[in-house]
Image (cartoon, rainbow, N blue to C red):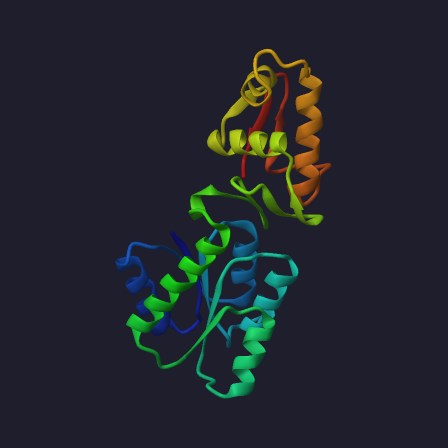
Length: 227
């Protein structure tokens, strides 16, 4: 499990980081709102622990930006503000839970565990079955995906192709091998079919489909998934 921690107070950040790592989580700690937003958009995490008062962008702004980008990452907000107005503002911005400083570390860990359980329960599957491509993601079991076009349901072949790429992340796959794996040895589609399906996945998941950075063409060989 990967936790993104956004906290600019050194002592609090260090304590939260150490405690979460002790629980077995991998923790990426940043100290500004812009860093938190950029990392949450570009890398997969299971929970964002987000302080409200951050340099650059506030936690409210970060949460709102992530939700507008349709990032479904669970967000636990940390703040010294305990008033109802601030709590409501945080939840309206997209936070899933709210913890007021000073807090007990055991409560923070319990809330993180609860957010992960709820997130996985809503997916009806472990997080390892979720493929994340930049700020988008696809559920390989239900074929539901958050894409550049919003929420869509992938076709069976689109799902199989994406699952194949996910299993061989970073490896170049030949078109013939893709055809065999996704369509079967006796399939009538040609290698051009593979190209067309890759184009469809790029339209769903690439920030710029004309200049792909995740589903990359390898000249004379095939495709590589750098999700």
